[in-house]
Image (cartoon, rainbow, N blue to C red):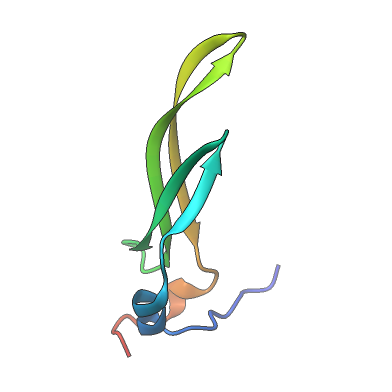
Length: 79
């Protein structure tokens, strides 16, 4: 796959992005806007939910990173 170019600036993303709603097995969660230590921009979610396996409740841990393609290459200062 060809390398993507991010269509927004770092400042546009940080000023304009809003949390995203994520539904896992019917549980509504909110992924927060994040600037990752790598420089990439996106959303981050972690938490725990309960799911049924063989009729028994099982706690599962969720870790979700959603990164904007090409955002790591954006200039680091907010311009």
